[in-house]
Length: 302
Image 1: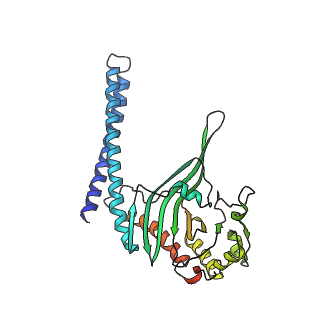
Image 2 (image 1 turned 45 degrees about the horizontal axis):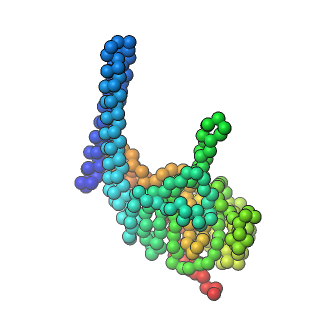
């Protein structure tokens, strides 16, 4: 094990030890406070108990943040270099909300966050991925709040080797809360309509929307449709594929944040490494599965 992993392991052990101490202090403090109830020592005991718990909570939070930061700079670098010839990882940054909204492919609510940007190159194809969380929180007349999650997963932006000029949205059955630009309030020049293909099985699994049938069919070849169906079988998640503004966007709804740490058991990081490899392989599977480096993306028309 290298030095950085040793440091990560030691920090994990410290956090585990501190959590154990926190539990003991909490139990002893509660028992002592109950025993002092009704006596002159009760206020003093209560203050000491609360103060001790706050101090431990602050220390544990600081250690937890340090562990998360070290994990992201150590483990993710360790795994990413296995897959990508070049990459840059920025754990605290993500896609800007206004930029994703401008693409016109997803609905947006009151809640949004994005982090863990990874920019890299795979097989000569540049990509940017980030975790994205989109939701909407509403409050009823009685003050009860509820949150509807629109999307939580990996958002990939890929720049194909070949240029294209097509607005095409391919939505897997079960992927919800998309912006389909079908309504009367959408400008006519930007409005999408449903596109039926000759592949019956593909039509059952996906709905396609576009602005121009001829341009869409130029991209949506039989080989690409077969590739999309194979990719949907490889990935155990619902997805949406969108060709917009000469870039390819693939949304994989994993229902979780990726690249997040968990404490190793018995000093073994194998499970964490396996989880990170799974996150990286989503990127690899999308790029290879969608034939991004093939000539099907070449725009030969004027």
